[in-house]
Image (cartoon, rainbow, N blue to C red; front, top):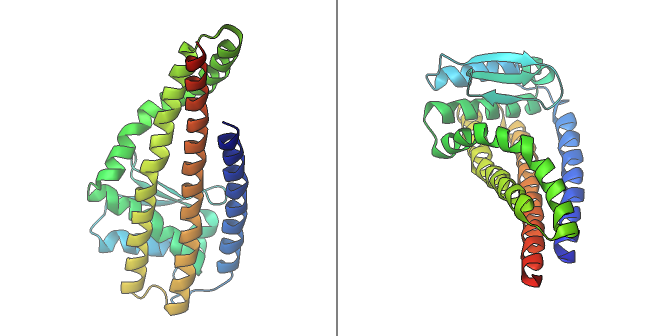
Length: 230
């Protein structure tokens, strides 16, 4: 159990390092003007149009690295820097988020599965921290594992969600990179920058998923150990 606990901390540290590296890469590539001089907004709208998608809006939102696609209202939400930016980082992010819109339009199975999990996960997240905290207190004080078992089941659902997210993110990046390359949105060097930026972004999801898996194993070992002692 100690090894799993250490592994969880290790993934947390790695996650922070990758997050720092991601921000560093985006800052670096944000300083490289696109030869095409297209803004993130223009790139997003062109990618949607090229895929025959006309019912998705491209809008600007506050914050940094807050870019996302919202399937419920069909909006590609780009942070102001990406929306107005005319650089390799903006091209990568704008195309990536449109990749999710393309997935939605083409009924990509993993995106559908992930979207179906969201309502249940939103409910689970409201109870999970309390159940885990109180459940562990009860487990150590009374030996009762019922509440902790429920909390761990909800945590397992959240862990599954994090792993389902991985193919969704990688596929969106692959769609984005193929499109910006085939349509000459970027030149060769800009393409490599875009690819590198999206790779670091994907690694944040990978590490987060592995960290959750390590935590889940910790809880399962905790439950298993207590039950074996009963």
